[in-house]
Image (cartoon, rainbow, N blue to C red):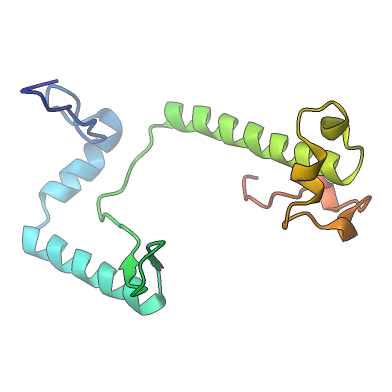
Length: 147
């Protein structure tokens, strides 16, 4: 902490203010862009988001005010080593979700073992009894593109 304030992590720059290696090409390009052009591009992106409907409303907002999904023109670049780790973790989680859902609609081992109470599954509004014992292509219930 500096002066009682937490120091935020900066994806592009390290603690010494140096550009991180995986941002070098982008930082070079960005340095050549005029600030007014970048500001205009942000405004254009915001207008496109509003036009297409990339918005949300806050729960409890009686007025139903639509807000833009936050969007930053500066991309978050992920280094290859970090991406490999994220990729492996995401694939593992998708496999776990698919196995869980398969078990819910087939063997019920997780319910029988008492890991998840039966009423949490079978009384849940998202549970679909018509899917019981139905085999789906490649056992993919959780449709997240990762191949």
